[in-house]
Length: 309
Ligand code: ZN
Image (cartoon, rainbow, N blue to C red; front, side, top):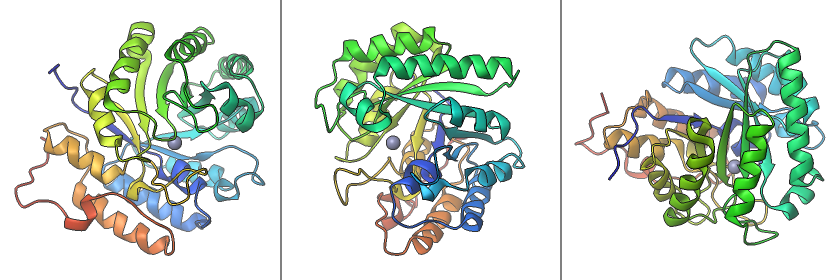
């Protein structure tokens, strides 16, 4: 086994990826409570929302307010998801530390989702880079390749297409790129193959993985990427999220389960697991009627558990 990376960042995306697919609209005050508690539990990278039109995603209409609160928390890197230049300009104006710009490797998904071909999405990314540079902002630009392992509309997505898109994003000025299994199509072998190719193209600019647990393989997929030295993974508290095409499907890998796996393996995450489990219990109360996922909360931490130093 290759030497595993230490530390590893568990980037919390529940406030964005999780909440955007739930019917419940969480009040802003609750989101701020969640944000502060996640920070107190040791989470240092949090995706706080998305700058998209409120009529499309009313769940995230208060992103500017959540971001303003995030910027008061010491040591926190707050990111937002933006689909286009307009969203990126809002992120710059609001002082986001990073933006995640999703670009779909599946042509069919890209057209259905943002009515752009992947090439048009890359051209928009280049405009975002130009706007960032012109504003002298230090905001980090991450090109996140979604549906990198398969797509519910198109089915197979050719690895060659994914790599071509990654190279185009790097050429368009991405500070970082990442690979996302948006709908739970990946397995550890496909993760290893694609991340190996991506590392050859992007080197240290390949910053992380985003795995949904739709079919129960998210932790195994994280491990496959971890073995290649990848040290940042998205996760959502209580595994909230889901898939618009599969009612009842689980969302991102659960933050608490991922942090538990890493800490048990001696890989520091900076997260206080007891505090995170307590926050998950509060989240379950806030989201009554919604399905939460994950495993650690059922039995709690084992008696033998020792957090990584
Ligand atoms: Zn996702």
